[in-house]
Image (cartoon, rainbow, N blue to C red; front, side, top):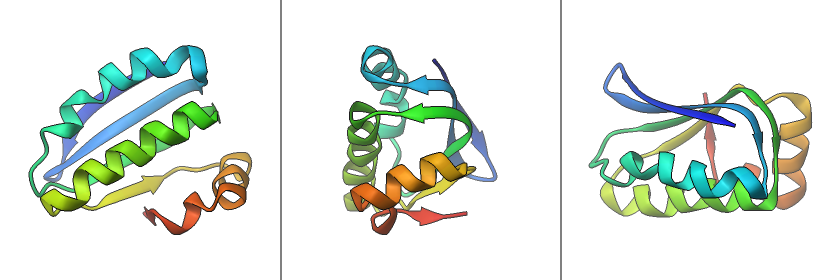
Length: 100
């Protein structure tokens, strides 16, 4: 699992590559720490190259959302394939996030 944080058009973009499973979630949590410092910047979670997400990964995404909202930031998901969309739909997470 590889997570890259970059800044694009004033937004923070987290690019995920590989499988975000329980084993990868500990390191991914550390990789996402720069998003906690955002202050009013939009956050984009780019899942274009994400192959799989477990409940641990969903919790990480939820944590980003819960941290960002009080600071006036919006969190967007982009690049979800059909399998990931299905996971987000089944868990109800699809209603929590905005999509780009």
